Image (cartoon, rainbow, N blue to C red):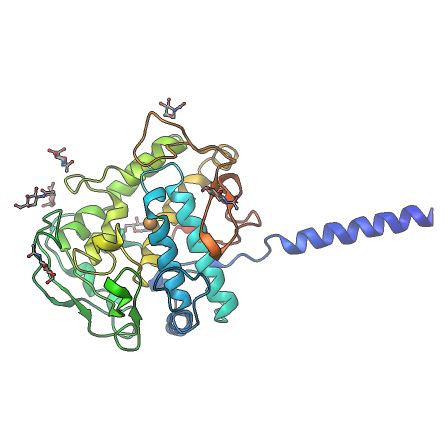
Length: 346
Ligand SMILES: *[C@@H]1O[C@H](CO)[C@@H](O)[C@H](O)[C@H]1NC(C)=O
Ligand SMILES: *[C@@H]1O[C@H](CO)[C@@H](O)[C@H](O)[C@H]1NC(C)=O
Ligand SMILES: *[C@@H]1O[C@H](CO)[C@@H](O)[C@H](O)[C@H]1NC(C)=O
Ligand SMILES: *[C@@H]1O[C@H](CO)[C@@H](O)[C@H](O)[C@H]1NC(C)=O
Ligand SMILES: *[C@@H]1O[C@H](CO)[C@@H](O)[C@H](O)[C@H]1NC(C)=O
Ligand SMILES: *[C@@H]1O[C@H](CO)[C@@H](O)[C@H](O)[C@H]1NC(C)=O
Ligand SMILES: *[C@@H]1O[C@H](CO)[C@@H](O)[C@H](O)[C@H]1NC(C)=O
Ligand SMILES: [Cu+2]
């Protein structure tokens, strides 16, 4: 009797333990403009803190912990784009970054996202309005463009037109020499963060009707394919919007040497929005969409081997491998975050 009681007490304690170690009080992600000024300062301070901590991965030219993330993304780049696990790899990568900000830099909030559809012009591809928002504000955001710098065809292999920058970011919290990036640069020479706005890409690739089209897909495979579309600038894809609308050709986010883009601190807000779009799509049918994956293991190989729920994604030394199944639920324990106001914004 007493023994049985003791056993059940032990069981309760065990259960209590596993509940405690899974996801309670997930950080709720918000759109950047939904953060108040103190929350924004805290976030930017945490990113700068990460960029002041030493690297742990030993990856080439990684000096700071911020570089570790950039280097891991560069390292994995050949395996994680135009594949079935694109959205889930980046989900895990972002959640690990969010966790590092919280655990290593005392950040109390959640990873914010940038809903570019809020600001994209659907009537004027050349509109610069999207760049005049708080996202690019020197105090209320991440700073602005670089100075216009010409690029030759070696540097601009896709012959993108309408470039406006290419130089170092000149204002805001991520200017050199306080903030530099070494990964991917020749000889690991530290370089400034660069931006090279291309308004036609930013506006054309960020429109809400593209998002609506992606979210209308009925299963994971068609969703994932619509999300990435094809690697061709003649067709818009929302993933390209932030990369090439902000990074252009010479900017960090678009830099083809870091293909398909290096890691500007805005990378995490851009990918945060892609994840929010994925999350919202999942919410429409959770019983199915928590247990469904597919799409190619090898980039663009749509007739070859597909990913399955037990396929593992690899983010190097940043965190252990995780199965796709464990990454579908953002509150499942492997991950622990959600979206404020059901991902609907204000
Ligand atoms: C924006 O540019 C794209 C690609 O050139 C074009 O298809 C689209 O019609 C343009 N949109 C507007 C509103 O001019
Ligand atoms: C392009 O410009 C880069 C940087 O200025 C230079 O190193 C490279 O030699 C140029 N390539 C050509 C083909 O002009
Ligand atoms: C870009 O322009 C160069 C020189 O005109 C040409 O050789 C190359 O094929 C073009 N690339 C693309 C992707 O159109
Ligand atoms: C991009 O797509 C256009 C139109 O669909 C096509 O004409 C062109 O050859 C493609 N370019 C590349 C580099 O695939
Ligand atoms: C992978 O999935 C695609 C689309 O769902 C399918 O057409 C293809 O046959 C699958 N590949 C294999 C090897 O089963
Ligand atoms: C991690 O996953 C990758 C596939 O994405 C696999 O090649 C590698 O062997 C896995 N590593 C471990 C330690 O299981
Ligand atoms: C993002 O912006 C679009 C376009 O304004 C809007 O329809 C959508 O509700 C926004 N989503 C969030 C989560 O803010
Ligand atoms: Cu990526």
